[in-house]
Length: 383
Image (tube, rainbow, N blue to C red; front, top):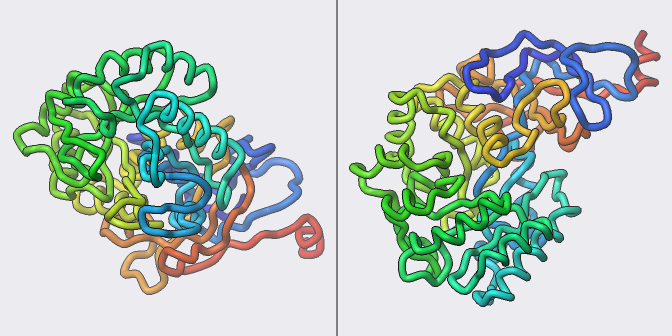
């Protein structure tokens, strides 16, 4: 990959790096410079390389389909919005979903297996998030972890109060499962409110939609979110006012490493292929955060919370990235300034595991420029 206009690492505090080339081998970043011959060259045309966005709150079901809005192809469309990985926040929207002990376990295992080898548009889908129900036993969590289920969600189970799920959360965490909780008012009919006391008692790894899903916690409770052990997730489908207040509190506490971004879609809010990049722009422009750090909240911070190598552009890491340019007709010359001013940049290319998945996004504004692929024969012919 040559002709870059710089690189955003995905790590908080890192400025735009003056990287012009990236060498990719076997799906991994081998070097942040061009070395040796290549089978294929992607001329970036001055675009800025950023890590692929990781959406840590989506409601997949099966296939590239959501019954919530009767939409096909939404996962592949999200790739055109910069997303290279997404995490299931439970397959709760499955029509007639099971609530019993055997059924919820079967659903989690089936979804995990189904998405293990199914990648719409190349997007890596972490499927199979167990819906924690009262009749589960601690042994069930160990069994599921051994079967490959690595995610669980509190908020849709038939508990009198969701805080009562705390013993099962501990069992899941002991088994190595990443647990997320619903936060705020009830969303769908099967959910129930989760108060700040519930959040603190549960002690989950991810405080899901800390800015409300979609109904937020009272303002007075927001500072107490920082007493929870997990990362605080801010979502596009939540309360923007609460989101900005949480960002402000995080900045005051030098705790932006505790913030991750997501969409919480598809939901009643809709299907939002540009939901992640739009959230990055809102947090950067309205929260007064440098674009490089806002992108880190959506990439490196999420990767760390999910215990994944994705989310950071560095040698040895997966080559999952987006190439950004300023949109055609923008008042700004570079994509990072566009983000800081609230404008969605143009995506000129998407790469997942070193494979070019798209040139010029069909969803973002048209980029002011283009990327192009050169084969070895074309390189030799032009030499």
